Length: 68
Image (cartoon, rainbow, N blue to C red; front, side, top):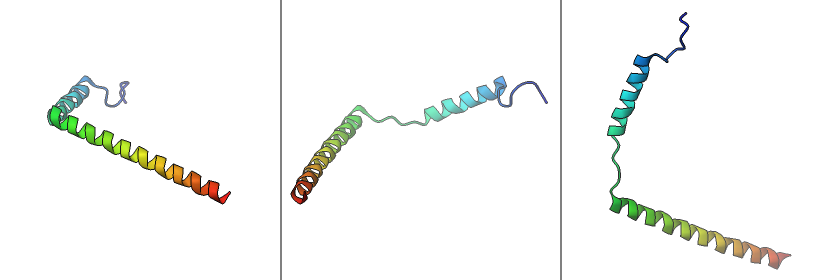
C-alpha cells in the first residue's frame, strides 16, 4: 500500500476542480427583475402565513378560554 491517502493526488484534485468549474458554468442565474418578483412573492406569502397563524392562535385561545 502507498503511504498517501486515497484520492489526495494532485491529478485527482485538479480533475475535481475542473469538473466543479464546468458545473458552475451550467448555472443559470435569475435576472434582477425575476429575483425581485420572486422575493416579493416570498415576503407576501410569509406575511399571509404569519397572519393566518395569528388568527388561528387567537381563535384557539378564545375557544379554550370559553371552555375553561
